[in-house]
Figure 1 (cartoon, rainbow, N blue to C red):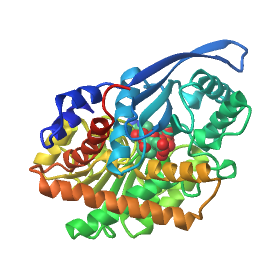
Figure 2: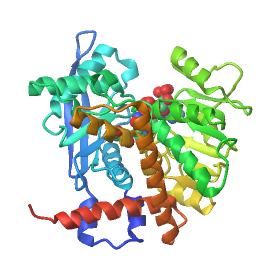
Figure 3: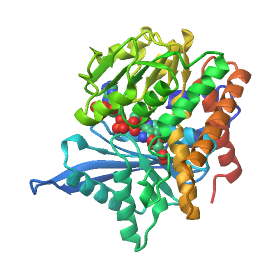
Length: 407
Ligand SMILES: NC(=O)C1=CN([C@@H]2O[C@H](COP(=O)(O)OP(=O)(O)OC[C@H]3O[C@@H](n4cnc5c(N)ncnc54)[C@H](OP(=O)(O)O)[C@@H]3O)[C@@H](O)[C@H]2O)C=CC1
Ligand SMILES: O=C(O)CCC(=O)C(=O)O
């Protein structure tokens, strides 16, 4: 995250003082979360909430449950939220939280206990005007419902706006559960227009078949693209004639995996990233495409649905080779854009139709892509990521500059 920031800094005028402030998160809170397990024993889990910067508005960012969560990971992810919110013009700063755990090996009751204790631990840090969590890897509407309920219990009244990505019946926005993948598919339209290509008969490979990846794959499939490969943590499937993604979704829902889907060939997870396709969509975890793999990536376009899927070195190699990378802070911003719309609806005690939400999401994705490509054309770089960072960094730096240093 820091290398990406430094690359952008070379292209814009920003003072040392402000850059110094943006290098570090405002705070990283670490908690010990004791949970009563189903066998009556108590297990301790390490959890974090990192708040990177709030110059533009309340901190905002998801919560991840995964065995690889660490202080460094949430810190980088919180920084990326600052740049993501800024590049798409949302009135939010950046944050991210996580718990070191494997929810797949826990019962629903244990995950609920973990979520409620975690919420209690961070209740003074979060709030609708302070810091608003949302779903990320291995969390979803049910997790957000537990956070909202626990936070509300501690405040003696119901406060829906403390989290976004809630179930619709609890004040969640229509369209939030599919927003990240929808935003990726909208960006694919803009990319096709910009480069004068047709995305609709393009071949696509998608790494990760969760909230972000499965929806992006289905929408591109519905638009006529040929999604030839998908995978999840257990492995991948490949069919050069194209997969029926809605059917793969049914198979994944039934078996928990995409593997052993009838008619497709099994492939391993690195193989998917180096398939000869037009578009590669990494939609799993960080550092999936590293320097050792970058020379073998054959896609012409990489749409980063995941956060941080390409290392800095791999990014340089790919850009040098002419691969067009649409960076995470822009490509996966659909999720937080609809989170913003949810927060606005909660604040106004009002709700919009899915069509309205979709229209607003499309407008903001298209507008943001346009602004990033303008920056890309006006500065001396082949790297769209660097262009996106200059847009974001300028906005955040200007907010700091105008607000000043001393309260
Ligand atoms: N949810 C959201 O709104 C947003 C998410 N993102 C980012 O998108 C990415 C995915 O998040 P999300 O879809 O929410 O998470 P989910 O938990 O819904 O899905 C993650 C998917 O990645 C798969 N996966 C994990 N490790 C690997 C691997 N090594 N190779 C291939 N697949 C793997 C998982 O497999 P399995 O199914 O087997 O567990 C799962 O299918 C993350 O980087 C997240 O930060 C970005 C913006 C918003
Ligand atoms: O919806 C949100 O607030 C943030 C989602 C998220 O964690 C992300 O965009 O990486």
